[in-house]
Length: 188
Image (tube, rainbow, N blue to C red; front, side, top):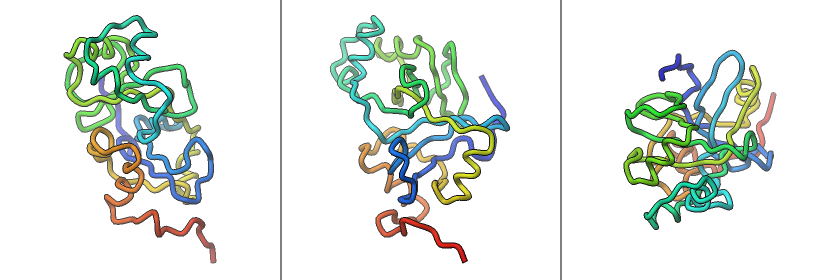
């Protein structure tokens, strides 16, 4: 279940105002894996058009929890939009889990959703459809080009804050006010 962590894994990427890609404008993404082949992450501040109840029903998983069924499923990124990704805490092992770092995991197997539906899943969990991917060196280049601000991961951004507050809160965690941030960078 463990992986070798890289310097970029378990950090949040905050899209700077200069990033105009419609998939990532004003987004916050958790980098889940990063190595010589590229990076993979999940956008954590965009709602999909689905609720967790709709996703569970489509998968044939029953749940009696109205609160669980009404949870918003995130739009995790443009790669594999048909696949579910569960960001969660806890130390229980699931069929297909990646250790992101500091007690945070990314699971793609059905068993974690079944446990959530039964009420014995991870204490903190968000479900996303799709993920974000970068080829070898692509994310590093985008960081150099001032497309992203990298900040330390913060649990409240992932699990507690309303989606519309996460972009500014993530940047604000290191003292950056994105509202007053220049939308372009200059080169001398």
